[in-house]
Image (cartoon, rainbow over the protein chains, first blue to last red):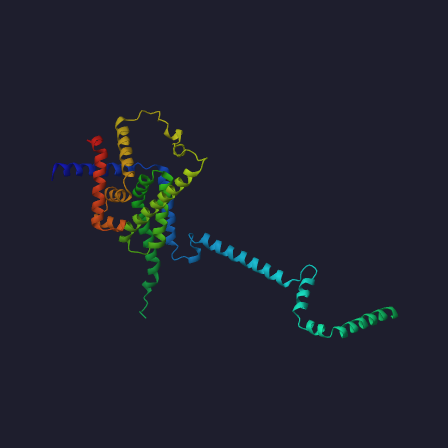
Length: 132
Length: 197
């Protein structure tokens, strides 16, 4: 062993001894917290194969997914309700239905007949109303 | 299907209990050294405690069923990963903070508690003081090593792992461990040699 190797070895041993000594001087607060951490880790393995979803690491993620699903459900339900419920006066939807209805075109072709019929209906209604 | 004997019924519970006890013993044997390794790397007590706690939990959750002889290298690999995570987070935080005009002085944040640092009324032995100063110098020098060199040096010197175990813990070849360790020794000797002669 050369002199340099001997010095390196000596340095190594001294550093090792000092680091080892520093381990023994770790304070009580740290020791207590390490002990708690160890108990928690041991409890983890003692609990055996816990449910995947109940793992503490996944609980926040599971909660977030559940919350997102709930929000999505509420938004979807609200959107569907808006689409199925009539509008404020109920006429907008009726108007669209009337415009889309092909019967309207038939009415245009027989426009004159229709107005005559409509006028007659109105008169009949009025006469019914007054005579009763 | 193999025949079931009365003794088989108790086997799983007994095995589980043995593993629990073995894990407890293993963690108790490494926790203080692991804490010091983390503390030297991070220079912050609470961060060091957090990474050791994380490493313990991760080992129990992910590798608790693995053979016991694998625990040590696995544990130290997890620990080093956690240390790197904290170092990365600090780096990102420092970069972000550097852009903020109202940032606080980083040095102010790390000022030690004056009450904790107050000199003890009892006279401190000179030897103890010298030892603490030498330890502080050594810690600082180790903390300034590149990560791989620091890891190789601490695992070999403090934890006493051999080259093969250190290689397993570091996830590299035995040759790399030797190189990192040798460079760490050279650097530390160059920095501290004069003080320690």
